[in-house]
Length: 152
Image 1 (spheres, rainbow, N blue to C red):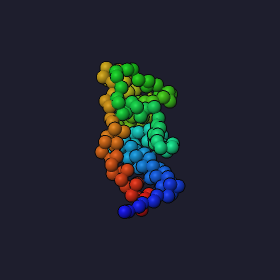
Image 2 (cartoon, helix red, strand yellow):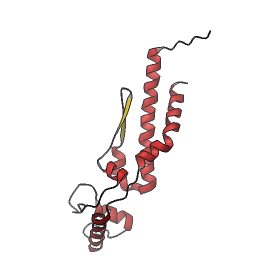
Image 3 (tube, rainbow, N blue to C red):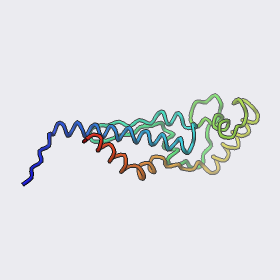
Image 4 (cartoon, helix red, strand yellow):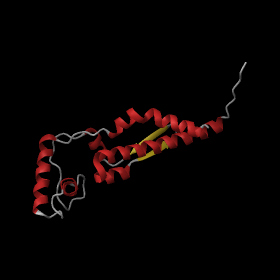
């Protein structure tokens, strides 16, 4: 007969360590996936992604636009006032992605922003499922790696 005795306190500590590692690794994978697809254009979103262990659950929080990036949006007229601080910052996006205008007030930049806003008003934005694809493709590796590290 073989008997295995597990120290319950030690097990809980190691499991908690593994869960913190899993939360951190997913958090970094989400950020990496966004950078691969969108470059530095999603800096505010990347900086807002945080994984937190709460009991036996890992919760991820991020800026509101994370949902819009993940699922896309239906057609809507986005705000594009250069003085408005709300997402999306279409002026900055147009300047970074299309190289239109050196400043937000440039005529070329304003025209490009208007055309982008009109396109979004007609077609919405496409989804980029950075959360779901990360879970689908990296879940096993991340969990396995962190359990191995915590319980060695």
